[in-house]
Amino acid sequence: MGAAHRHARRSACASFTTRRAAFTLIEVLVVIVVIAVLASFVAPSLFRNVDDARVTTAKAQIESFATALDAYRLDTGRYPTTAQGLAALTQRPAVDPPATWNGPYLRKAVPDDPWGHAYVYVAPGRVNPQGFDLLSYGADGREGGEGRDADLTSWK
Image (cartoon, rainbow, N blue to C red; front, side):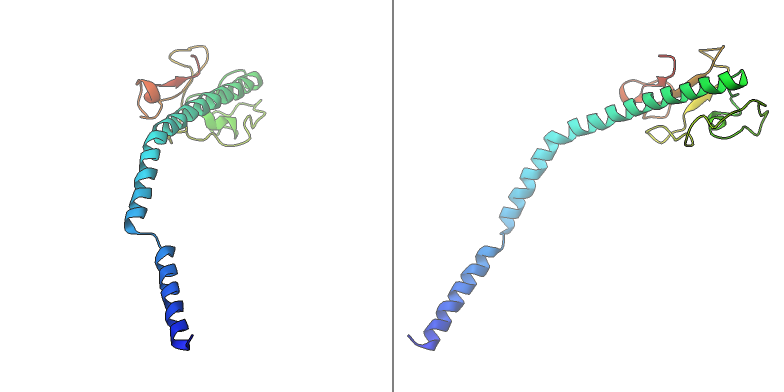
């Protein structure tokens, strides 16, 4: 067998191997379509779980803040005013500071709700005139709503 024949045979094998190592455009498109179809089935339940997690987080945070507000009241004899707000749980209020403030009552500053809106704190409350109203307006950030836009409150 001559050198030219061996070289031609090696080139044919190399070219066959090179052609099979790459994917065709059709194969890539089929894979993308399959992934898109699977994502269309999984995405709705995944996003529903994210909304449920945000509601659960907001409820837990409201409970935690309510507990801290009760501790504040035990020390000072009253809840922080609306003007003092929830910041009174982490730092001594600058406006009308109570002499018996023994905080901080929370380890960290009060975060926004899971949708990026500030929690609403009113004291004395409209619903709870002897205490406070603490709520999140939900995903839409507006009073009222249903589903993921529903208000989450400290009294329900």
